[in-house]
Image 1 (cartoon, helix red, strand yellow):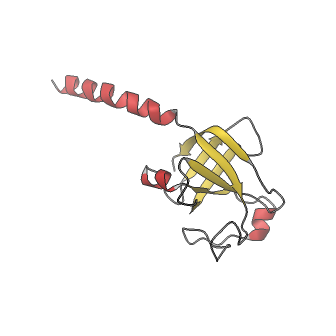
Image 2: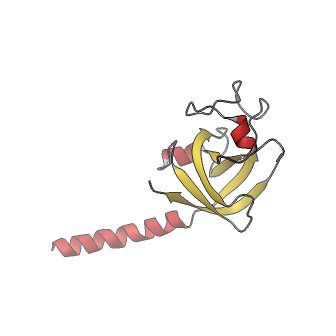
Image 3: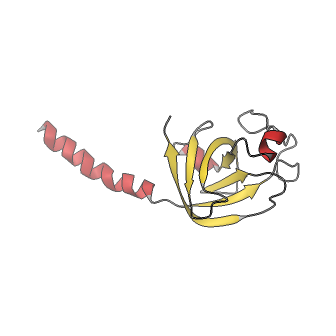
Length: 130
C-alpha cells in the first residue's frame, strides 16, 4: 500500500518536474549605470556592492532575475548555469539582483560597461545546488 502511494506520488510529480526542466527564459544584458538601475547603481537588491574593477576584468559573474523566479524557488545567492551555444552568455552566474517588475521569466546578466546590449530568447538554465 505504501509502495502504491509512493508510485502514485512519483507519477504525479514527474510531469511537473519535467515541465520545470523545460522552461525557457529571456536573457538580457545590463550595466551598473544609473540609467539602468536604481539611484544607487552600485548596490544590488540583496545589498551586495558591485566592484566595478572586478566586473570590468571578469572576476565575477552576477545576474538579476525576475520576481516570478524569486517567488518560484530561486533566491539571492543561488547560482544558475545558463545553457546556451553563445559563449558570451553561457556559464555560471550568482543571483544578486532583481529585474524591473514588468518582466517575467527574465534574467539580466551584469556585464562590463563596454558590452552595451544583448538579448537571447528561449534560453535554458539549470540551478546549481550548493
